[in-house]
Image (cartoon, rainbow, N blue to C red; front, side, top):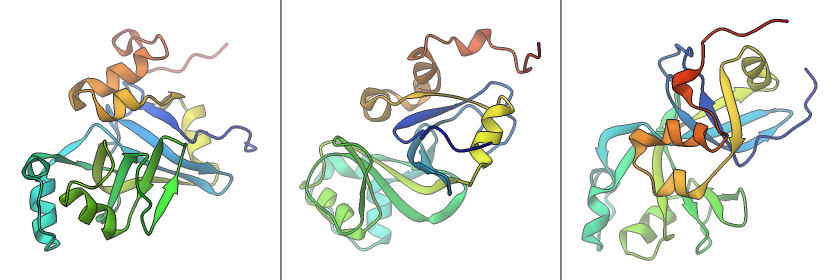
Length: 187
């Protein structure tokens, strides 16, 4: 399948029948999508680690007490020992990919240091690991009815309760996931 449309700044919404335990009932924010493949962060899978615990492991002093209880997410099954901070626009950091004028992803330590001091971006989602697809792989999975895709929403990423993000992302498209069949139709 030739590459025709980039899904950068889109949600990938797992179809109800997607059984892969890494992606069942997930919403993935696509940070980059080119002919070479795609990279995204799962935004609705909290793990049993807080940002305070993570910063403690990295020996980063927390000056903002409210930061400590911020949840950390399982961003995907690839490089689960590496951190990714999805965030709204703010100060410049050493290793940032600007996805849109309003949303970026940063992988450098300086973003965590800024967050710990209360000088980071206004809204953040911290994840360990990411979701990745090789060239053409995501397109094949979409053809196999594994995913819905639609434009992303800052509100869904940063403000909604994680347990509601899967349904909310689909509702942005006017889709009720409870009414979908897991079977692909063929004419």
